[in-house]
Image (tube, rainbow over all chains, first blue to last red; front, side, top):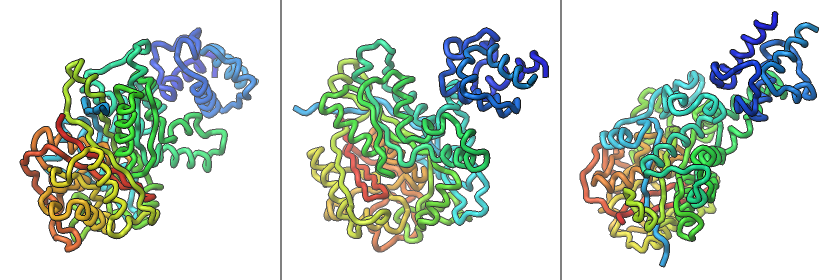
Length: 81
Length: 413
């Protein structure tokens, strides 16, 4: 899976799982400030990432994710490794 | 002098309708909201019927990012609250000083039971790491009160009663006291329940509390009828805007009714069965009448708890006779649960709506499915057809598992 595919799938997850509006989801968008995804929502997102990309994201890595692009980075690194 | 409390807004989502006007039309017509369960396949259950809110789509009412974080019970209450506040012509912003004087008192019997069941399945099937971070916030009974305080900017007293099927009668009564003692000018009070799931159905069935009349869903809930065989689970919410009288008058608010009296008691007898003879229920009614300073003979209509269980309906009848004496035979008593099913934690609130609308329009709604009189239930239950009637003072009863009894008296201002 290449990066654009990860971005597309992540965007779908944010819309389907978290109920976000698709047009607001930009790669540079910050979860908390721009997308109003709070700490509980971030946990939901992590669960969705783990389930849908078949990866494990430990808490210390998860805590560093603040933007959509950073989430893509983490998934890309996991899939690539 | 005691601060007076009036009702200035109503809202509801229930098996018969998604708003107050349609609900009241259905109630006067005697429509049953009961059917075969659609939420899941009930084939293995002894009871296969309920009064459901079918085709519920919360996204018609709120953003999906919000609705998905709420249990179904909270969605119902959120919509009922939105309707009630709009009906009352009240809205608050985050920086309104008045927001600090507007609160919420919710009644809920069981909380987010469907979420509980769903997340327990997740725990068993997929392990602890997959239980939703929203699991707890969705199942706790009080959360709907918290959610509406956030979304509608209600920063006054905020609490939740969990007295089973008396919960929302207690919520309305307690909210009345909050306004009387000057802790708030406005209270959204009401109740909600959304418990129609396999787990609850099995539990109520094992307790032998619910009707098994699966071949005749619309005839299943038959309060006071000799052949009644249990209650029918319902779901939904009702919300009332309670307001201090001078506050309502000052802003020329439409006033539906005054909350005149509130009484409560405990049976102190059994976890599910009412005390034979209805002593506890009678005390709650007496206290509500005393609080309202009205004589029993002055009551024009009683909306009974009337669950359609053998024990409730005969005991409630006895309690009414204890308090009303000979007048018991002159006052119309009906159970609208015959149509709505039993909203459990929402029952006292939706039945308060019925009392208030009955008074407004001079119509006593019927007890449907009333066919065969029971010698132990010998009052005027307004059988099958609604009745035009001058109604000023009304009484509504709510009794909950655990022996919680609550009664409310409403009247014109």
